Length: 256
Image 1 (cartoon, rainbow, N blue to C red):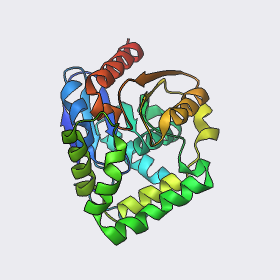
Image 2 (image 1 turned 90 degrees about the vertical axis):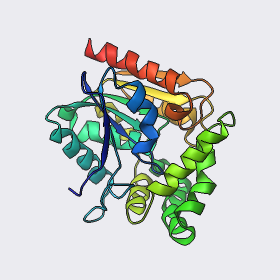
Image 3 (image 1 turned 180 degrees about the horizontal axis):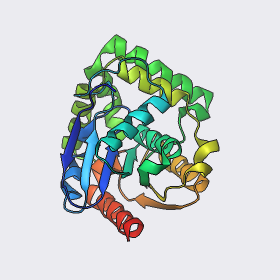
Image 4 (image 1 turned 30 degrees about the horizontal axis):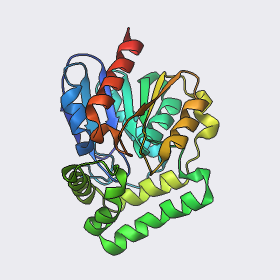
């Protein structure tokens, strides 16, 4: 496995692995690294080919990203609770079916069953790599970043989201991620997820939307579904106190 950069906080309590969205990095989990550290050992990765992580040695599909997350968990010598936002949630769900022994529970936030659920979504996802190559990371981020939060988000958060995307995405890693999303339709395998799962969605998410989260929640056996008020697609950043409270409640229930 290529070198994976990880941000880490805490040290006591269960291991919580955080997997970011397709246009982000470990920086997206600053509120969780700070807020959850007193209760868990929180680690947030830069996915292979993102931010401070090395480029993968070859193309990665969804299984490849899930296997990279599995190898990271194994390096800590234990299993983990896995928090995935958007694309990170898709990886987390595949991780839970490929490596169930490593996943104690899931928190799937503002995610979907993949872009392969509709031909138009898949095509749009595949087009992103070409767009990134043509305009570069900064212009790419300035176009896409503001949509990830709600209209209520402060300007400082919008700026931080854009800066994080601009400093995180590059080819070929982003292209591999986009292709992995374009080919993913997890609906048939949701019933195979044995880990207890909390599904979270911002009520103002206009990227994947509450309907996509409802599809995930409805397809799982052991699930709770909650809405975070006044939050867009990045509920963990826009309403971190509310988001963290739900995560802590979930961890308390599944570790009791």
